[in-house]
Image (cartoon, rainbow over all chains, first blue to last red; front, side, top):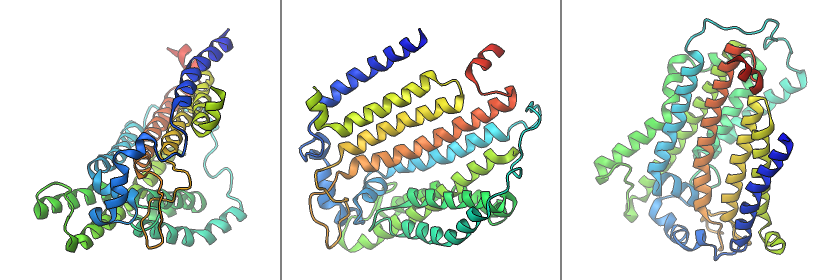
Length: 240
Length: 117
């Protein structure tokens, strides 16, 4: 009975969706509606107008900078929420006994060696993606994810104590708000120099400043995002 | 309709992925598995929207010296980048709530939790 209901639900959901999808313009045709409105202008004017050769960076950091500003606030808020949920009341835990602790299974030598071998390369890659987000694929969020993955894998290998010692608590607090903070700083600079929050320089001669701001925000998002993700991981692993 | 779906196979694939995620959410009993189902549904939506921006033979929308048209649509990619960040945030919050439920009740099976009430 339950199974029949599930199948019925899936069919009821799938049929209208498939029907709608079949009516869409052909996949990959340049005449699709999302391609015919504002994208041509972004593609045509993006580099001169917004300061980055990578149009995706132009869109997220310049044309839709407000959106991304809210975005980095969202990841910071999620960290705050995770801390509020998990660090709130430590007492009253009723966990079943005999739970395996994190040291119960030692990390294999092969995994440990490979991680140690690769981690400098991962770090270089993350920094490259962060700094070159305006002229090549990449940007702040991506490099933040790579850096956070590096921190998490290092935590698994060397243990949490040693990994956390690399980033003292006081600095960590600052890094966690790095992304909203850089956005705020750049936004207020725009307010003072060009009259609007997050206003970028528009004239030909000041394009270097727009590019510099994009790089600064990229660094801020990368470092801040990595710090937030790593902190979430550390907070979740708090009681193991 | 089948012929039309074959033309738009990429979109149809994301619909199938969406249904797999929905199946997980509906049938799985473990809260973490339910949430993985939700994440699969998110991924399906992301894949669909990114696929909307694809242009036949299009390059990545990066203007360099050797860049040549056509380019893929940058807007869906930028929007989905934002969407992924929100997905990560919600995932983190949901997992921490699940950890909390486990600390309090000792289980994350939905039916056992329902019996506890």
